[in-house]
Image (cartoon, rainbow over all chains, first blue to last red; front, side, top):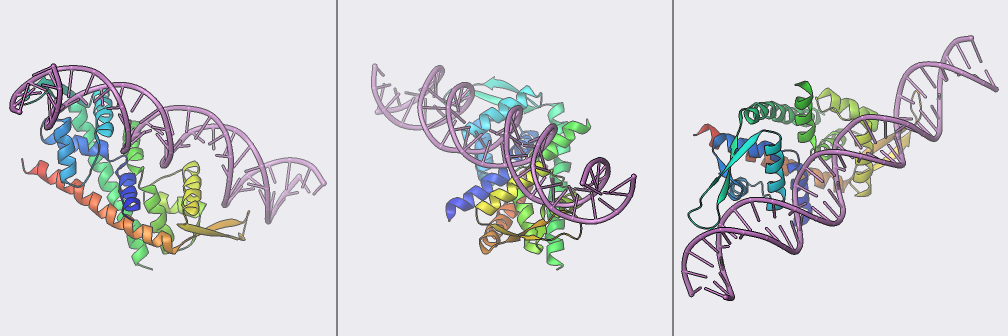
Length: 114
Length: 114
DNA sequence: TTTAGTACCTTGTGTTGCAAAGTACCACAA
DNA sequence: TTGTGGTACTTTGCAACACAAGGTACTAAA
């Protein structure tokens, strides 16, 4: 089924989204809708109701700041900017991510070797 | 801080644990305590209170079965066995995992290319 | 002034991971 | 037979999270 397959992916995304946000913002400033599009582009689809609270949480933790900017069309945009603390956190997450990839590779390998 | 670092890892583990369980059980039958040790061995530390409900969930979804077996010492052990449905799910998860690794690699690369 | 498009925000729900405490079986020793 | 330590499985209560759905507000064009 398609839906169960989607569930699998949704489940796995949990806990990694925060990492993705910091990755994107370490590259350039962005506002929520543009972040959504970037995530969609790499196949990590997320909805607004997930992203907004997440950005607010990270902002409250001091990982992000934001500033308002006029839009060429439509309401003003809230551009998020990663902070030094956010970059430090991102480094932690890079390490954590690589460890997790390695952990699963190890599990898989011990499987292959049977 | 050590603790914030642990939090990062704990957060990332979410949603991947189910995948790890199926990986381990696709290799061989195992009981909860042995699964805990295997996860610990690859650096994915989990506690009992997390694992047991997860095994029960997967059993209720038909991904696992179990049988009781005498222990050489101590109380009997509940050996979990992956089902055909579980193996199908595992294949889905393999694909989902690789896609996620790829997605994050892409995010990282677009960062590098700035 | 109404409509369409863009952007941000909030509320309620179900799921999940975890800490902590509890139950039960076994073997060995006092 | 009573107690103690080790192993194993289970449950309860809590906090965090992702998401669906609905809501607010600004802009420009019809």
